[in-house]
Every structure is written in C-alpha cells, then in structure tokens.
Amino acid sequence: MIYLDYVATTPLSDEIRLTYEKILEKYFANSDSAYSLGYEVSGLLDNARSHIASLLKVRPDELIFTSCASEANNTAIKGVCFQYMNRGKHIITTAVEHSSVMNTFKQLEEVFGFDVDYIGVDEKGHLNLEELKDKMREDTILVSTMYVNNEVGTINPIKKISQIIHEKNPKTKYHVDCVQALGKLPIDLSLCDLATFSAHKIFGLKGSGLLYKNHHTTIVPLINGGQQEFGLRGGTSNAATYIVLAKTMRLALEKQEEHYQYVASLNAFMREELHKRDGIVINSSEDASPFILNISVPHYKPEVIVHDLESSGIYISTRSACTSKKTEISHTLAAMHLDEEVAKSALRISFAHVTTKEECVTFLKALDQSLERVKKQR
Ligand SMILES: Cc1ncc(COP(=O)(O)O)c(C=O)c1O
Image 1 (cartoon, rainbow, N blue to C red):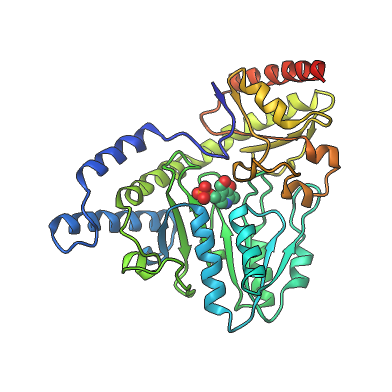
Image 2 (image 1 turned 90 degrees about the vertical axis):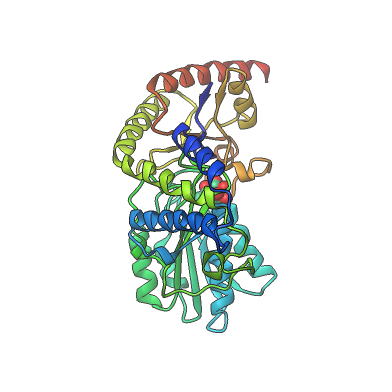
C-alpha cells in the first residue's frame, strides 16, 4: 500500500498506541474523583497540560482538551460570538476554511443573525489582505483564519493578519485553525487569542483535539456540565487520550525542522516530475506547505483516477475528506477562481516524513498508467 493522504489523517504511531494502552489499563479512574485513584489520574492530566503548555509556550490554564479540532473550532468561534455579541455582531473569516469553521460561520449568520464577511483569495489561494483591512469595523468581534489550507496548502501570513486586526480594532479576537500547521511550521500563539489543533493529523489518536484560549479572552461554553476543563467543556475527562496528546505533540514538534526539510525535498521532486507531464496542472503555489500538493488533470474525472489508483494500492484524495461525498467543485478551488475544467479535476496528494522517494516514483508511474487506462475507457 502507498498512502499519500496524510492530510486526511495519519496512522497511529506504535509508540503512542503502546503508551495509550498502558494508560488505559492502569488509569481508569475519574480524574475528578476525590480519592487516590482519581488524584493519580488528575495529577497525570495536570502534567500533560503543563507539558503541552511548555511546548506551545503558553499557560496550562489556557488549554482546553476537546474531542477533535472540529469541536475546538466550534467552541472557539461560537464561544467568542456569544460572549462578545453585545459589543457587535460583525465577524470575519475566509472563503477557503475547513467545513468546521465555514459551517459554523454559516450557522451564526443564518440562525443567530451575525453579519459575516468572507475574505477572498487569489488563484494560488493567497488571502486578500487589502480586503481584510477594508472589512474590519468597530463592531468586528472576531476574525478566524486557518494557518495552512487543507486542500492546496497555502500558508496564511499570521503575523501580518494579526497586525492588521490589532491596528484596525484592538478589541477584535483572532482565532487561528492550526490543524495543518502543527508539527510542520513554527507556531507563535502570541499572535492570536484562540487556536485549534488535532492529534490525528500528527500520528496521534482520533477523537483528540485541543483549544488554546488566552487568558484575556472569555468564551461561553458549548457543553455545560461539571468543573472539567475550567468549566468550559463539561463531561468526564477522557484522561488517557488527553495524557497521550502531550507525547504525540512532543514527538511531532521535536523533529519538525528535520521532517519539514525532508518533505520539502520530496515535494520538489514531485513538482519537477509532474511539470514534465503534459496535461497536468499544479494548483498549489510554490510557497505552499510542502506537505500538500494539489494538482489537476483537466478532462478526467478525479474520482475515477482515485479509484483506479486504489486498485493498485495507492491512496490519494480529490479534496478534504470531510466534504469528499459532495459532487460540486470544492469551495476552496471555486474561491481561487480556477478554470472550471481545472477546478473540476483536482487531486490532492499529501506527504509525511514516513513517505519515501520510492513511493513517489511508484505513484508517478501508476498515475501515468492510470491516465492511459482511464483515457482508453472514455
Ligand atoms: C484545517 C482543518 N481544520 C479542522 C479540521 C478538523 O479536524 P478534526 O478531524 O480533528 O475535527 C481539519 C481536518 O481535516 C482540517 O484539515
């Protein structure tokens, strides 16, 4: 099998699985129980939170464990909107966000009457910063942008965006979806008020997410319950999952630079090879995250290619896994105003540090054969 869809999810690392199994077996008690078994779990949880806080250079009480990044995005965005709606109901995001941000903004607009502006991008996915400047208002309470786009890999200039927001309205909260940046790019949380992360994109567990919320920001909780997570997310702590998140993040961050350089070399090799082929268009900009390479093969149905490659044991995708069952053009590619034929025929290839050059070579050969086969069938 050749797996080239690491942006959708990663396999669980053996090291994390073993640690998780050990913790699950031994530390089953409720971390809020007032006896030694509970205190023991609660102590491990505190250590994990402090460990993650030191990795991210924030305070432990600024971290909230969640079940996934989608939950963290919902908690951050709705939490801020409901908290600060008396100050204003204008909120801003981009036209290319993950569905967990996009649909949250749509709900706030359609159900809760918020006034939303969606900032556009150019044909390579770069955000229109002038438009952001123009759209910022006195009553703007929140801006939410991703760090790295999950379909084409475009990297948003978080520092510049943060400066624009603070110059235009220092009271506006800034949320950054860091899911596709964690373990890949440097993350400076002093530039934003809230940020979100997911474990299953970095060889960790599914059902494990994290929300950073700085201590100057208040949110209305989405899940009311007990005292867990500083009263901001009720429900008995999924302690074993939270505890292994610390190790998952440490492993991803300690080799970040090495992994980045390696994947950048694979990406450069793939780009060079793909450029040699007629009829293949590269949609990801040169300065995008090297972990994601979005290409199009105009006049071919991308689902057909994906399934044909699958028959050779090769896995890539057409777009974000969360929207893969939709048939229309991806909202990201539509926002990039690509030629319709290009936008309709997009394929997403994504790499990790475990991807080998041999896998890339095999993929390229299989793609050539697949295009021949599919063409003959048309
Ligand atoms: C940019 C981005 N944000 C959020 C998510 C949601 O993550 P989770 O699966 O943990 O809910 C994803 C997952 O694909 C993503 O790529």
